[in-house]
Length: 94
Image (cartoon, rainbow, N blue to C red; front, side, top):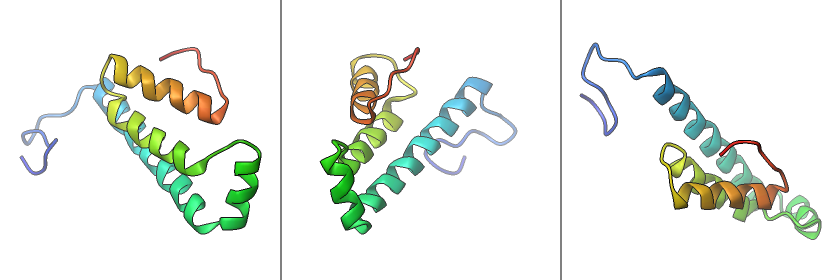
């Protein structure tokens, strides 16, 4: 095994774990882009803050959700609800 989450050679992840790993990567990439926007695009970030969006807080919540997406319970629900609230979206599933 090589790495914290590596599997023994010849063993593959079940399809559900592959999907969760991909979801974690997508959420983390989006969080990185949001954090970069918050830190680099000062004028644009000021404008979206005036519209009620906080790119830095959204980034933090996306990172938190990416860390909890493969679990069940309070933390996952907290970050899911937080991301929805900050982005002003609703999803059908948790």
